[in-house]
Amino acid sequence: MTQLLSAFRYAALPEAAEAFRAEVREFLRASFVPPPPQVRARSWMGFDAEFSRKLAARGWVGVTLPKEYGGASLDAFSRFVLVEELLAAGAPVSAHWIADRQSGPLIHKFGTEAQRRKYLPEICAARAFFCIGMSEPNSGSDLASVGTRATKCEGGWRLNGRKIWTTNAHHCQYMIALVRSSGEAADRQKGLSQFIVDLSLPGVTVRPIVDLAGDAHFNEVFFDDVLLADDALIGNEGAGWAQVNAELAFERSGPERIYSSIVLLEHWMDCLRRGRAGTRHAEAVGRMATQLATLRNMSIAVTTKLVAGESPIVEAALVKDIGTTFEQEIPTLVAAAIAADPADEVDADLLATVFYLTQVAPTFSLRGGTREILRGMIARGLGLR
Image (cartoon, rainbow, N blue to C red):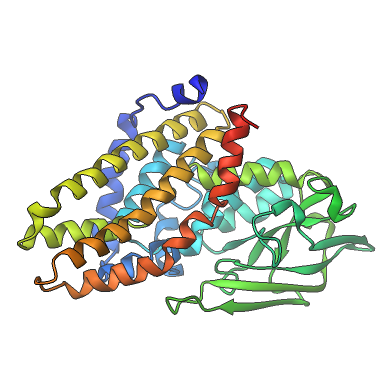
């Protein structure tokens, strides 16, 4: 416990990263016309390939990847600032999000040189978008129970099975899929591998799933005798479990797990400044601001470990667990505040933003690993199980 707590001592972003913040804000002023808050609240799911290419033209997609592959060779601190500013503005980041955050770094870490040369420049130019092939129907959060299978054959691998909750698969060119390449389901983590799947291949079917908010960013993806070339395998055959855990560490370690509801919080505060009820909610606003400041510092502390070359898997899981709880509390808090002032006229944009986030907030503690899975990881990291 002491070792874990010591990881979250006060940490500050370096001056160079703060100088980079000014550059990002200037870019947003020039290149992003803010839509209403209920649209900006969809930042995570806002798919806009043109906006992603504007970022790419500045070198801000694949920002931590080496320049030789089209990246900017910036550190994790710079990525922290970039992500923080994009989410705070409510910019549409969904198109390049997954490839920038985890698919690109995964290929860079575990892929062959040929794979790096083929995919990373396309990612950094926002010409290649990736989705995540982890979750499957009937598997819940038990990632090791995947049933999708790649069978060795002449010319490569035959892929059969399906994936679900696959964000933006209908817009993406590629998926990195965790599948079973040997053994049986009872072997659990053994015999799992990761493959790059070209979603235009024969036998791939993508079906969008419409959610409660009326959006269709989730998908179910079917693989029926899809022929993958030998070079679709990432890393070593059978090493998929270790690799996917490294990928999830990329996914959980950034500021993304704090700011999903930040547009709502900011717009509510603007409404309070203009209205009569502001002082009545000062305590609630102060509590949210204090939590945000603490979580942000914890996230910076995790980033500091990444810059030092460490792999803060347990620390990232802890920040993700607490951070998503915070994100989910914001729409609940704002809805309660609106209900507490029935005589006040409610800002229409505020109401629409609360309505949207109330519908989608339950997903915040699902994506990137459920609360139960994360707490199990934390308990193991503390030696409690």
